[in-house]
Structure formats: structure tokens, C-alpha cells
Image (tube, rainbow, N blue to C red; front, side, top):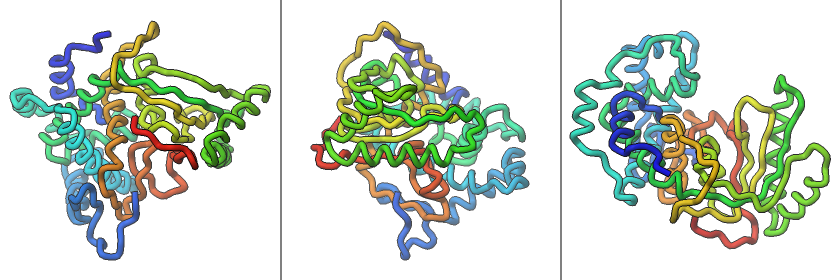
Length: 334
């Protein structure tokens, strides 16, 4: 299935959509915000960009008044990490951006306009767009274009086979959100205990009324582009993850990936046309496999790396889930 004309899609990204989609630092890195792939970004540099966000953008001033500039700092560090991974992915995949497109985009720079207060997008996306504007604009645009091209290259080829169970609540208020998270993470640890543990536990869950569970599930990315942006599609075989498919619902899923393929188009009679935002998020998810190639160290003042969200969490307890290898199982490359 043709996703969209490649040049038209890239022009769209470059022209204005820009839907962008660890370890603690050691004692010798007091002035370092992050080290990724041998590149160091200083705390002073992060602060310069935070100051720029407040000085030049009403939205940055709004966040300052709301005492939320920590969100900006974390997003700056996140985008520095993603930039390194994006460069690596582009080099490995032979993906680049036509300089004429970049030049044309910068002549009508979609990032030049100050970001107004009270943006219409969700807060997470709004902070991402703010940081894209305080970074080097060329770098922001090229990163977004490469990530989109990466998604376009693999979306119709990517497929995962997995077993799963769930942890859910009927409490629509989410009052027991922390308890659900703990239950899901504990179930993930049990899944990862041995090569046979997940199958045994899922067999029990399948007999429990109201429990969502199953084995031998196969999902092509093209069938659900939104799901393709989740950690499920970034996992290697014999890896377990616990995560929330959607933030709004009181439901966690615990999966163990059995197979991941990305080498040839996957037939699907339920293929869905991805939006530009979904492509951007899938592109970021596909960077997950490059994390093992870099030495990543994050200063604790900016949080900890969260592979489930492909972002930074304030602390371990606020991560969006957990990823674990199956103990005793041979790890495979996807």
C-alpha cells in the first residue's frame, strides 16, 4: 500500500507540520546535562535554551509563570538524545534530506513565529514544538524529516507476534492509577522470570472472567499506526513490556514479544492510512533499536530515560512502564 508521495510528505513535514513526535550522571559530570554517543551537552547550554524559550515565546513565559520550566529542560535533553539517534538511523538507512527542500523550508521558516500562550495542542506536544523552536531550526526540521522517512520506509513491513495479558480497572476516575501501574509491572516481572512463565500465567488469565489475555497474536504496523508508535513495536523478541496503550483508559497491557519482522511488506486487509503525526511518532519509536548503540548518561536533575515513552521521566516511579528481557531466553536481533 502506498502511504503517500514521498516528496510531498517531506515537503509537508519541512513546510510546517513538524509533529515531533538512562543512567544517572556520575560525580565528574556535575556541569553536564547529558552524554549521548560521546557528545556532551552542558547544563549551561540547556539553561540558555530555557532562557531563550522564556525570552522569545509567550508560551515559554506562561510555563515560567506556572513553574513548569522543568518540562522544557527535560524536553531539550530528550531532543538532544533523539537527534543523536536520528543521525545514526539516517546514516545506517541511507536516509537524507534534499538540501533544496531544507533551503525552501527555511525561507518560509515554520519555526520562526513565536509560540503563543495557551496553544491548542496537548501539553506534551506543545512543549515539543516550543523546544523545536529554540533549537537550531535546520536541525529540528531535518530530524523531523528523517524520522518521517524512517517511518515511511518500515511501516508497511513492520509486524510483531506476541502474547499478552492485561491489568484494568472499572474506576473511570483513575483513583487507583498507581496501584494499576504496580500490578502491571509486577506481572511483567513474573512474565520475564523464565521462558515458559508468560505462557503459563496467560493460560491462567484466559480462564479468568473479564480478563483480556491471549497468545499467538500478530499485528502488522499498517493495521494500527497508533499502536505502531508504542513500545510494543520497538521490542526485540523475548522481551517483556508493561505499558498503557492509551493514557485516557485505566488499562495496562503486559506483552512478551515472540517475533519482530521488518524485512518485507506485510499483507493486511485492514491497513489504515497514517496521519502525519502518527508517522512522526512511529519514526521516533523506530529509533528505540539504536539506544543500545550509545552510551547514554542523563544528569538526574533532568530525570531518567524512559524507553516506554521514548522520553525523560522525572524519576523511576513516573516512568510510563517497564521493559525486561525474558530470563534464560536467547535474545535475538529484530
